[in-house]
Image (cartoon, rainbow, N blue to C red):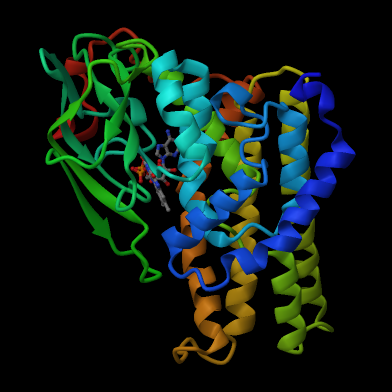
Length: 399
Ligand SMILES: Cc1cc2nc3c(=O)[nH]c(=O)nc-3n(C[C@H](O)[C@H](O)[C@H](O)COP(=O)(O)OP(=O)(O)OC[C@H]3O[C@@H](n4cnc5c(N)ncnc54)[C@H](O)[C@@H]3O)c2cc1C
């Protein structure tokens, strides 16, 4: 009997329940973000619950999308925050490698990512290419010893702890801007890669500038076709939005904590606060339902598409509304707090919420995508499909 035949949802539910009941002692005494994240992944793998939808030949469960959706449902609110260090690897790099990479890359990279042994980052954004990502200027040249990359990336989350990056670079400046881009797997631990942390308003350093100075990439570490990286990049971004929409990465304040704060600050009878709290609950449920709908449609064989922007946009909108309510309740009597005061956590939540509308593509960019690709409204009239990249005034070529 194949693994698929043995699979039953009730059996899986029990295994997931048991795993989360038995998890706390496995993590107790493990200190530090990376160590705790890795300990959680190791436990998940040993329980046979990592990558349930990933084919068994690549170290996954081989069960398909319904098992993934079931896990997402039963694990809600129970996954340690430190698992976020794997969101880029598991939510973005891994599905992209499985769909577009050559077999030797899948064999090499998928299983270690699932096991949490290797951490990934995403080197897309540049100082002159964020929303206009196709304007990126990092160059990749093919040499006898492999590809050589030069340029600068920015806002690269987790680059400081990543071993590998999914990286976009320009391989043909004579082609129009969307046509001359290639996706690479870049080993981060090499002299040509310099990572400089950027301190955020929260005080944390979760993202970085990355300088590529003759960074070397093996000849066969191209994902998809040379100069054919744009559709692969778009597919990765759809996975990214889907991962964020389903609660991965940056976590907004959960409704339950918000409700407790309302009670704690004695505002539960205030009609306006009650209304705002109800809106936050509705928002959180809508985000969850959108992500369930998306999982069902993937299960029915529909590939992820521009609709992923809906979930991403909704998480951002709702997360910022929740943070605004926290700001009002927790800081009603002043914005100073002492270390160890519960307002330290609340301050982090309020300040961190700014990032929700930027990371993974801004709210405006999601709205553009929804308008053009979901609602079928007219596209941006300023199009440069036929102009060679070298003739465009994009990014720092403007200066
Ligand atoms: C927490 C966080 C983590 C991140 N992690 C990563 C990462 O790991 N890897 C990575 O590559 N990048 C990462 N980013 C970068 C992120 O993808 C970019 O910040 C984002 O795409 C916006 O690009 P930008 O900052 O250059 O802003 P810009 O593109 O310069 O946008 C500035 C403003 O103009 C608006 N705008 C731009 N173009 C349009 C348009 N056509 N229509 C309407 N409005 C428009 C934008 O919405 C925005 O409000 C991260 C960002 C954050 C905040």
